[in-house]
Image (cartoon, rainbow, N blue to C red; front, side):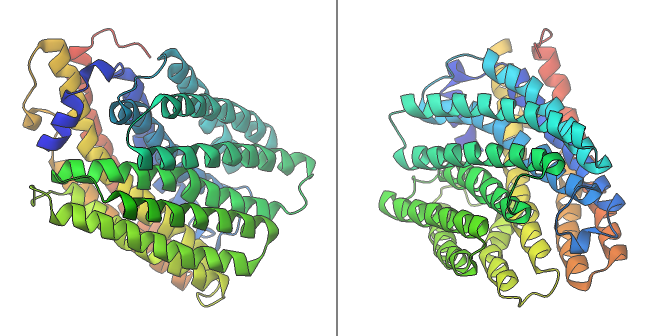
Length: 427
């Protein structure tokens, strides 16, 4: 944790107003709770979900937009300027982006849940504008950065994926009404790959090269191996996207094989960082982070099994759960419980002249409840998919909701300190 404090403490001049990242983190915490509620409502359909508007699609987008994207945007707009030593060109665009993206996501997901095409199109349009504003800030910061070339490469790959992602997402929402896409299902598969592996995946892999060594107090990963890992990850995303759009199983299978290589290189670098780190006791957050790496290892194997029909009727759904819920959500929640208190401590330090004790920021007990519930709910939901059990899916959703409420309680316990140090927070 000293590493994180130093990382942020050396760059207080590049800290955004506290309201900027925290609005996204609060939205993600709310989306996390609603996600499990939506899974509970959709329990009868979720284990065999194959697309189409309704509660299951709303649940998927509560995960992708409501948890993953909100968390990633909030973390990226704060951590990328610190990592690249280049502040955002201005703060107002990300504020405007939040007022487009967050309400737009609410309208979009509500439209999906109620099968209302008008709401879906309106929500998709607002979300697209918000994400494009974020993409412009991301590109500008990467363009001006002169350090950390591997992290920048991951950032550019995430940027390119995000542009394609929002274009496909808007097209899919319009297609629900106008029916102009040749193959809606193929476009939806490509949309999922670009979102889960292109945008979110590349950001997660890139920031891991900074955050994991920082948490462990270790050296940066070997640059040559990091470049090999980036090349493999980018190739896997490209092959998977093209294969999905053209419905070519061979290309998608090749993406899985290359993905195994990318995962092996990435986890090898992370293992070296942890093994060579000065800090060995990494706490509860790394229980989640290590668990996410297990799910990452299984993800390309699950994808290959689904493509070849080895995983049964629930194979595609299980693959989606492993990638989005098992790997990405678990990783981001683990990282978030590290980042949030340090961001809070830096803001309070800048406002008061001295850093607070980290034990004074937040209540730790809810994080233990969340970790236990999350690590039960995800495997239980996976088993529900394998067994096609609505009852097991509903049970997993209840457990997951308890954990999500606990995580929200932890975040809520930090907010009063932020409000005291910034009584005039601008949203």
